[in-house]
Amino acid sequence: MDEKELVINYVEYDSLDEMPAAERELMERSMKAAATAYAPYSRFHVGAAVLLADGTVVTGSNQENIAYPSGLCAERVALFSASAQYPSLAVTALAVVGYHDGQYCEASPCGACRQTMAEYEMRFGNSISIFCYLNGGRIRKISGVKSLIPFGFEAEL
Ligand code: THU
Image 1 (cartoon, protein in one colour):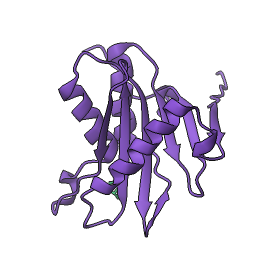
Image 2 (cartoon, rainbow, N blue to C red; image 1 turned 60 degrees about the vertical axis):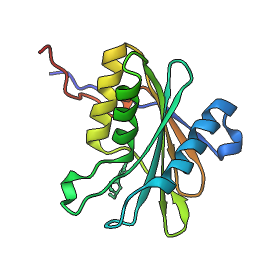
Image 3 (spheres, rainbow, N blue to C red; image 1 turned 30 degrees about the vertical axis):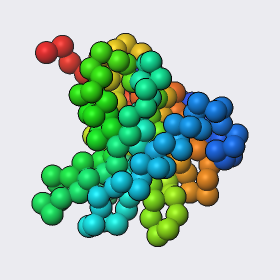
Image 4 (cartoon, helix red, strand yellow; image 1 turned 45 degrees about the vertical axis):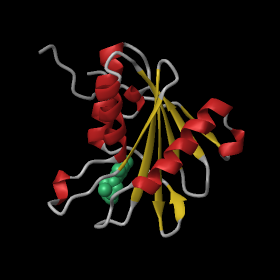
């Protein structure tokens, strides 16, 4: 029997101002995208922005439905839209933010979105950086989806 340990490394910026310009711009695109959310049931708006290998940014927002499970998270709206429009371009980064009660707030990708991001890492063979806005304006940067979904599903099908 081996006892093992898993270490997750990440960084946190104090604010948008502390981020390198390209990263800050991606976060700002996700903040703008939150305004396009269709979230009449939860009233929790989420914006996401995906950066592609050639610098293209594709945004998404959560889209809800009266038949609740039919809705989709902002992250997957952005990822699927990026893949549908630019199927040959790798995803290199994703930023996500919540908006509720008149202010930006924390949003961290759900399990299904993490598994979806893992698929894009596998598909293009590159690591994706994830930026999450935190309550109070700090931003967390996680380098690589494996840190978000350790032991995620992988199979040779
Ligand atoms: N949601 C996202 O869009 N992304 C997340 O990371 C977490 C949750 C959405 C789903 C639903 O429309 C609303 O936020 C409340 O759960």
